[in-house]
Image (tube, rainbow over all chains, first blue to last red; front, side):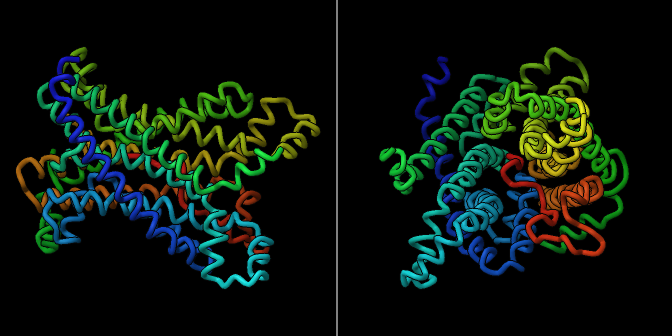
Length: 215
Length: 250
């Protein structure tokens, strides 16, 4: 473990970059997937088109996407923006279906009650439908978070620094320890993301606990 | 730039020979299909067994999530550095890389098969029992056909995962289309790198479409509701691509 001891600063630095590259796309992806998921729900004809379209994007292997994006965006290959955009695409691909299904899981009677109480469509969406869809959306977000953390490490092959750089660095020197440290750090980071999402879900769904406390 | 990529891809010299596109395509398909086939031979029976008996349920539920968290690039390097020295020649990287591909393909297939059997309605299972079927018959004639949509989406997720990881595996010396990406990056040959990326993306897309077609043919119409008369078709049950919750991670 001497290697880790000597390079703790570097590992922490790479971890912070990894959190940035995997975390920002989660938020961006969620913000994009919410309106798309709503559209898929609102206009039934759009559902298959949006779902099939986004899953086609998901079939593109990550390394290929990282390499193709600079040509489409006009960025340089080493620009971290490519990784952010690629991860956002994967997040949207996973979440559009989740958001649509989550909104679909809200009982129709609840929507009708809200309308009867005078909620207009916009406000009903923000304060009734969306909160009730949170548990389903959160489940999808957890899957996206864990796979984002793991996919970002591939970006080491195009020279974008993050925990995956420990893999390429260790492999080039036939040195196992950085690779093992990198794998463990990635797994811990995935667990951390998962815990944060679970925590936020817990905070924004107080009604799920209200029933338990009363009984 | 697009023109240079097109020029590279349409140059017939790049299609032929031992490092031509055709040869790399066949290699890529060969690795991917072999790995998925082996993983399916292990994952499907195991998933069906766990789903049918309920034994080891905890194991499967956690396996899929845990497998998603492990970075495939790191796993690949660990396998090559650890197992590589135990072999000689080409096997030194072929065996570890192949092993990683199989290991990564098992969790989605296993959890698809398990979830498929688990999700069969108890009424249907009871009806099969009531008709006098024994446990193995219920599994073969009822649970397996009902589980096929999820088994297929598990296979599709695993295949995408394997195609993506086989691309990355070029960095440890594996052949396949990944060679164009890795070699192109190494010598800064942009048209080659970009062409390789486009080819890999097209391959993944084509294979997923083929599997979607296979799914259409093997899944009973009783489940999908696709009848020629079109009476029972429900928008929600029309074949949609692989369930994202089971999708790949690389």
